[in-house]
Length: 353
Image (cartoon, rainbow, N blue to C red; front, side):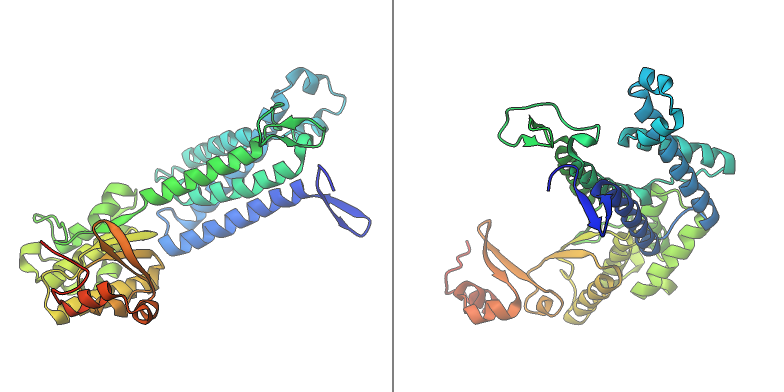
């Protein structure tokens, strides 16, 4: 096999390029639907449909217009004008056309909310899959790289080592994904870090008002749903000074969860709480994890109680991880440092000043 790669079904040959383009669109749209169901949408369903139609139409036209204009004289002089137009596409043109299509539709339907947040990760995923298809076409896809003498230069079908630019783009898109995912992290601080002058409701609503374009009725509904999960609905009107330690922790937890993060960092979430309230906070964390499916990291000295909700344990000493594994694995190891920490003994490998 060689470039362009094809799939043979009987006597029919289908380019992998075409297959991956279609697969990229399908997977990206399915991922968008999953995110919309999980995170909710600030835009009505009908307006969202119109925006998607605008993005699709704009991307189809933009990719072909920019692709054909890359060699405008050849396009305009071609006897098969529309065939040439349909056969030349660029990713940049698709993105620009999609953006123009979205903005035109939003202007027509008078939609003022941000519409791109739910599209970001699906779009990156779709482009990664699509660029795999472009790579499979080699030099028969017009964005192939220039000749190169670098160790990773590849023969893309013409016997000349070239820059695998599509692979560069895939790596770049993966890095963008990682950076954006890290920016979505949320934190729970030891003391909750609540605004003293705001009520429980206003504290939890704060990130929605600052980071989204949701309307107030939508914010109200979403906040009360989160407060219901935390058992705080009847305390929505109270200020932090009127709350117990456990209630402040739950309010802080609700404020972080309202943005439905993919990663959560908990800094001593049970500090200063009695054992019963502390266990209730851990139970709430576990319920939130089951509901939202985030990756959670808990920094705590509250052992062994925290072992009831975690899947893996890591123990640090002097800035180094000295134990790492599941609870059963660590117990079987019989690590003396771990045993000393559990027992609270001053005798052992751990030394404190």
